[in-house]
Image (cartoon, rainbow, N blue to C red; front, side, top):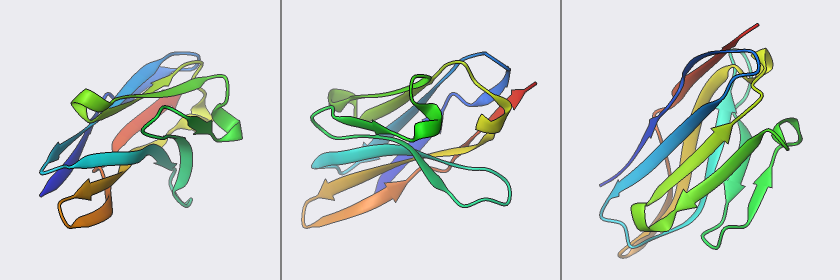
Length: 119
């Protein structure tokens, strides 16, 4: 069994900051790419940022310069530092991870954490 558990969401004012964390646990051999997605009400889930095992990152244009993704491979954890938050960042944020177990490789998702930015 593999679990991704997110934390760090909440309510913040316009211009504020939040730091999301997502820890993977279970019988994990290695983790390849990890990422953060967001889904606002009535919209499709979309990629916010991703990071390779080696630390290469990519970002959605809407968050470049404001959000930073990072990871701690020893802790099987990915982070999303969110600065200069805007009301349009309000969404449920999900982490995902490409995880290799003995004999298998799958993409796993966290349960989601709500981020609400008030104007």
